[in-house]
View 1 (cartoon, helix red, strand yellow):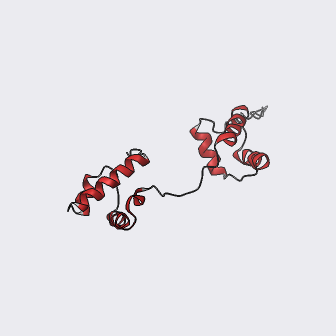
View 2: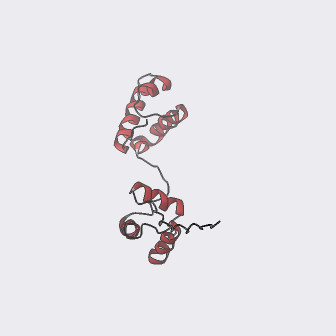
View 3: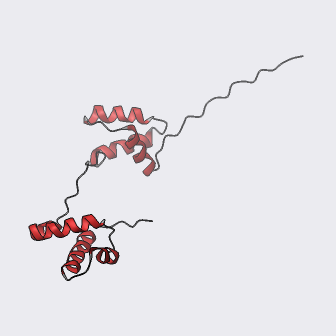
Length: 135
């Protein structure tokens, strides 16, 4: 099980690791003592950046895709899915595109719906009448 690590904890761990290495500890030993897992090459890159950039090297520079479903868009999706339990994610995708002008993948909508307990509920189908055979 992997624990969630905040950016402040990550930054403190990096500072401690660099401090230990500057006082003569090897990268392998510093990594073993660090609560945040980090590849050996990453440790050396961080040390080099600290030597070149100083304090700025510890600033978090992670990047990735922004979360599309937040704020008003998320509220709209959740409200719609609560009121229309049998709505397909494809239909929700079209609704979001029309109303907000953004494209959200069906798989992303499925993840959000599952996280909020709003997965699609299939409508119960009527049973076909059974044929009665007379001898």
